[in-house]
Image 1 (cartoon, rainbow, N blue to C red):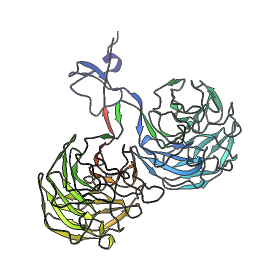
Image 2 (cartoon, one colour; image 1 turned 135 degrees about the horizontal axis):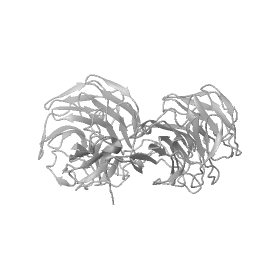
Image 3 (tube, rainbow, N blue to C red; image 1 turned 90 degrees about the vertical axis):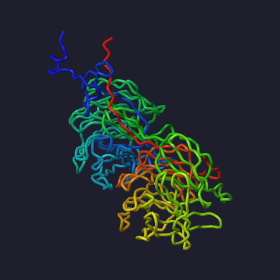
Image 4 (cartoon, helix red, strand yellow; image 1 turned 45 degrees about the vertical axis):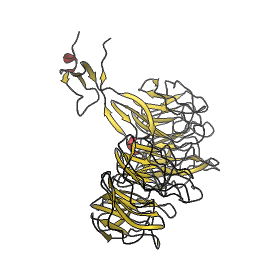
Length: 607
């Protein structure tokens, strides 16, 4: 019998730990586990972050999982055709440029990158359209129209070499796009509708599968002719396709919002693993081994998404988890410190604030214990620092707004130099000896002032651009991020470089009284919960967003709706506690852990 050395031309490595870095196919003897191991792929779907909006019958594209795109579809109420576009960066969804023509039932150049994607056909709510639009990563531009207006069309390819096939009226018509115009290609063997999203591949090597209502037919295109290939195992329509002719997959579909996932290896289809939530008409992007599917009908429209990964790296998506409950339920409190060493202080009771609090609690990563009470009563404080060296500046307490500032040393609070004027609802970042307080409600209303603290004195620095209070914040006294807030649940984000404020990308969902990763940075922040400022969004939300230094994108939602909560931590290890919704105060604590990957070797079993 041949040995591994004879087969591979090298010896099996003898290691006490996994190879680092690891490569798919690595084989080694694990001396700690006394086992022969290898890095082999594990295929699985995992829950992804919510889309910024609910969207059904949508489309997707993007040549990689961390640069995918979803566009068009229908949205409630009334299945209104949508022009929405959302981009995925591997962690969350952000809002892209809107389509020129809102529609559903169109198709895309599946293997095109996020910054050069083609979208064509569909129905605008009244008529089938031939409209073709090109995305440049920022905005859509109309280019040459298709020869035939149609919906339920399948597509694949890239923006300069795309294919459109099938559609309205069970057509077998094929068209090819050369970057400027469409020309007729040879007909499909079996014409059908209901094929949107089912295509994948490139112009000279593409596949379409399924169709109305339970079609199993699959065909492959070589740039000239269509050839029937092995049928899919489960007949369906509006399923989502991704990959190439040597490695692709068909996911979900109707009728019945199927969870089926079938992989194509170049000659046959194989089942599994299934979606966690069956859906039809979901948008998909990425590759056969690393894809993201979002939106669709489950049966109503949804904002959920799922990642598919087939890798030796175990992918764990970011998520919120329950932590220990506060001893005293309250809202309007503030926080400092980290997820495993947090500080909660001050606060108020139910709306109308009949009760003010000076309670302080310390968190060790699992439970809260009482610390020394504050000198003054009240909530809506600007806090910053760590658990054993924190600052609380301003507040709303009897008899109203206060300029009181206190420092905490890990056991007791002491009064220090006051702010120059009464203030509440401001935001803070930094440390006890290098802090920054910005915005808030001052005697003149929503304020624009910002002040630094050196551990002894306050110094006024450059004003923020947008007057606001109850905003989110992250960073340091010389590199800060300030975002959203009241009035009007504004969406503005500003960065501070130690001398001036600069407007940067807006949050997706404007709100106030939300939690934030105050000990994060100005290039990596988390924003969660809060309340909208319009009649359309009057209550607290669970929405979570992350900032990557350029733009905001969605993250997994919190479990409990609430506003005016305490918070701290970083973008990948944040904590939110207390708060209210809408008239109930909470003691609930939630902890956020960002997405992680870990290389895991599989034991080779010879039994």
